[in-house]
Length: 191
Image 1 (cartoon, rainbow, N blue to C red):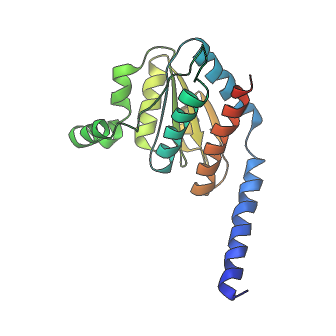
Image 2: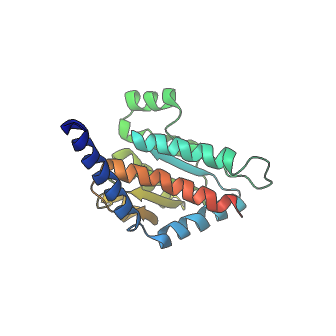
Image 3: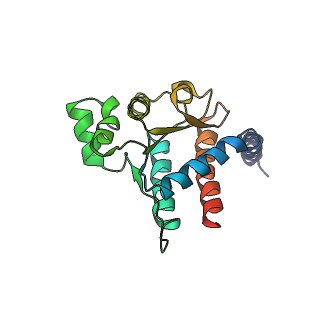
């Protein structure tokens, strides 16, 4: 094995070790609360809005697919997930004409109803557009959830519910936000 491959193997091992160590630090209680909250929202016919930027936007879209199809197809009670980052023309219009910080909150103003759930995904916990939407939901009798990494940032502080991935590594935080989705989906699917 040449030196370059040996260096890659060390880095691969380090990454997976960090991932395994961090998994054990994620709170089962926070995930349990999230499961109950989502289940209640489905049973109460509430809408669940989800959003994020960059990789977290991809995770938000993945949640929508898994819950709207994977957990709702051929079921009497269906999840109603909406990703606030999936309508690119709307996002660009708000970003251009108003502010990028308003791309999520302005969409909520169109659709949000009291008791709906708003999930913000932010590795740093400090995305201004996510924070603004979570604040709006809090001020209008919504239920808020933050999925965070690093120290949790502002999102952890203002969300009514939070699942915190305690690591200063964006990729591992994003990995675990998606793993949490699949964990919750699997649990709810088996009910």
